[in-house]
Length: 250
Length: 236
Image (cartoon, rainbow over all chains, first blue to last red; front, side, top):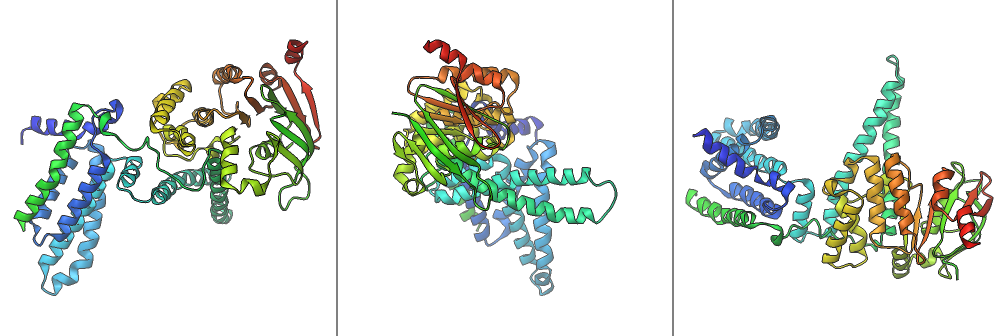
């Protein structure tokens, strides 16, 4: 394939990460999310490998257009998942169904690759915003948001604590082992403290018991420029195209 | 009528042997700016938590707009909502105060809870992001920003709803000298006949430039009250 063509494709696919900075060209995260789920669903329903292989081919092209340092990270997870699936499916091959092994492994590889690429393209915040756009309960979005936030904050707190322990450990002693328990206990206490502080902070700012996802998180059609609108319309065309291909590939 | 009236307020945390606050009385009117000063552990934050309706006196009374603030009343959603709409509280630890996914959502949260329209929320969020020099980090998660930026975000999130009473627990913490000077100037502009400002500060010099009343607390939690020299001079 002509490298120039690859470069053009790359530029188009990179458009939303560039777009976030100028805020006028991006694909609605909800479209990306629904298309990813749709793709996985169709793959699961396909009876032969044609559809799955075609989707994998497209996704691999998308992966190839990512910056070099991210490609390995993207491919590692689907490859691991596929290897694990193949391992589990070995008995099927031994019992005379090698096609099943191949099909299931390919489907797992495709599903994980689609999700990993979705994660590469859409930030966590936009993804939870997309959940909200799909009318998932706000409390579900809030729980997801909160979980990720606490994982980051407490993870960082835990790292700082272990650094402090390491700095005070001059030689290998049992104290280090007892320190691990201390760190765990402190992290639990800290998380408890943070939860009540967060509740108080919310109360102080008018929270009355029902959480709503911020309207700022929901992207609006009117914020897009013409190129962005065209890009979104083209993206929407992928749904019927994918369905048509699925029907013919069956 | 005083905006805030404390009458012989004492407070003891559960499982504690000693009072954290002992028989504090003060009367605070709108249009004034109070500095609560004293050494670490003297009970400034506890006093502020009572004023913000997060804790309630063990004995004595706290009146806001003439109405006694009690745990029973604050359990009523409407009453608590109306109270918190009028009182803005800046926590000492900004990390504890910031819980949204991005700086802009943090600023919008209060307005959305108070029922502002979407256009108003977007407009005011942009305005306050600009005002607090946060536009460049509007999409960032609050736990990824610096201490000074966190403090500015927390302050913007409170001020955006324009509360009648501002309670600022050590607002100069984590701010460099330039930002401290900016905040001092900003708070000076916020002073108005309709607003009561309370802040905690260890530094007498910066506090005296802003406050017109002082509340000194010592380790035994006794309180002395003093009018600032520049405010006394203005009145005479």
